[in-house]
Image (cartoon, rainbow over all chains, first blue to last red; front, side, top):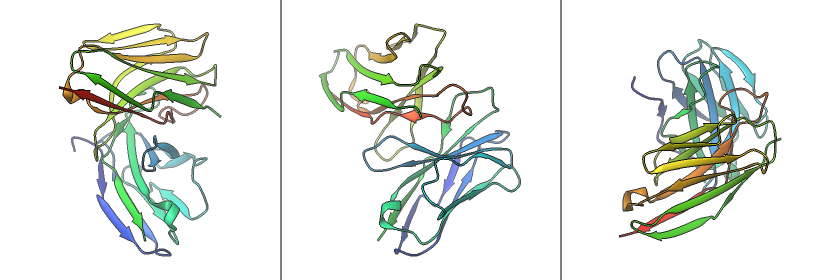
Length: 114
Length: 114
């Protein structure tokens, strides 16, 4: 595709529900990143994949957050037992390889936990 | 870890005036500094970036300057236009971390009045 694609665009969940957010990176991009953007704030790093390997998950806020990229392309961010503080926009970004620094973001998934 | 401070939080200018947004960072090993523009409800878009071995970079009406000694960098927009109105984020990548793992500032809401 032409850009990073994320789905769903909007997600409303009741507190305690599990959610799964999908990211399709730009074709051929090796590295994939997840960021969380709370209302009125800058994005905050969650986790990073190079191909299927999760090389850095230092930004995941709790063990309720889990990300995977089993075949090195599509990635899923899963949040278990959602809480109100999880409400945010979740952005996915990809880069061509480790040597390319420009991040191309998707449009994000806006998660609202009621 | 890296900490990025951004000022001002809001900036209002008249069309045709210049706008300047400033950021400071804490990690002297940081080596890459991108700027993103985010319109309401849309993805962050990279508008300009600079590496630590360069002091200034310009692209048409946009320029970025970097002072490594003082650990600050600035975005300059000249001849502002109403379509420049958006939220602008600075970011820094600390040395030794994975490419794309950025620390963002808190954002500046720029409003350009016709």
